[in-house]
Amino acid sequence: MIDYAAARQTSDSRVGWRQADAKALPFDDAAFDLVCCQFGVMFFPDRQSGYREAKRVLKPGGFFLFSVWDRVEENVFANDVTNALAEIFPNDPPRFLARTPHGYHDPELICRELKRAGFSCVSIETKAQQSRASSPRDPAFAYCQGTPLRNEIEAKGMEKLEAATEFAATWIAKKHGRGEVTAKIQAHVILAMA
Image (cartoon, rainbow, N blue to C red; front, side, top):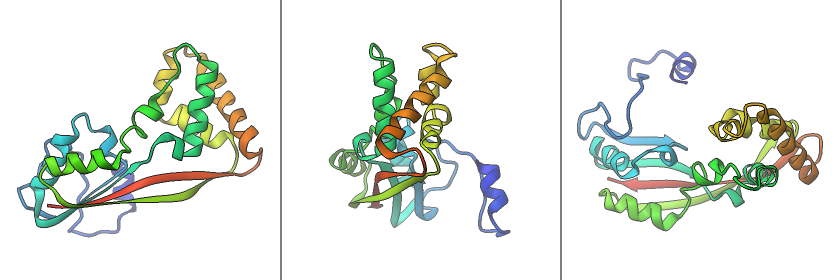
């Protein structure tokens, strides 16, 4: 991903691309005016450490801007896939989508954790949009085979991945049609001041 982003960036000596641990950023204290994180904090193994690091590298009055997905029920295709998989694996449904990318959605919790890390003036805005795909298989494939949800499906048997993907695609087609599909997607955008 870093190589891809770097290849798309026009030459600019002010921009550098590198991998870093969110809990131990390789930057000096008070080095930045803005820290951004797009749909990443849900994956931090220790959000408080990540938040403290973001604050540490920000100048006083700097901003931490990030986004998180709202609960899975507010993100229709993710919810459709979650429900479809619960039907075909009723004894132990794969819950990665609800648990992780959509599991950190409570604005009050987010605000408390940011304030505990030393941030002030926290604002959270909820944004709804439409997610579009050329077919029901596209979101089914993206979620089932393009995210860590794949690991939970394959743990039930490597041969189950394609069947689960097809079942999820059929589920989406029943709800949204067989051609191009559109459904609600919703996230929170958070801005906190250091």
